[in-house]
Length: 123
Ligand SMILES: [Zn+2]
Image 1 (cartoon, rainbow, N blue to C red):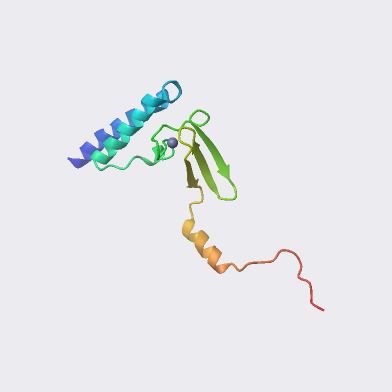
Image 2: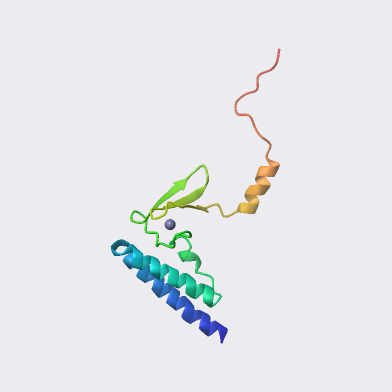
């Protein structure tokens, strides 16, 4: 019973997000309304918004993020992350693209700070 319910909710979320994408250019207000409805539907039926949509809406103002139109997508080598800036409200979201988080932590702990270049002997 619950599985069936989940599927219809997910279909509705899919439809709302695709409509939001179409409306992002022409009418941002309606597109935002679609995203809000999709989030509300997900919350009402206790369903998580699919991962593929996590980067496609602003978490602050719920506007649909379309690169070049309603948002700026950049990658930062220093932060190892995709940085999305919302043009509607100016909020910045970070999505790290390093998946092996635990491995990174381990390597940071074990590796000692290394000096680059040959060491000079003290006289
Ligand atoms: Zn925003």
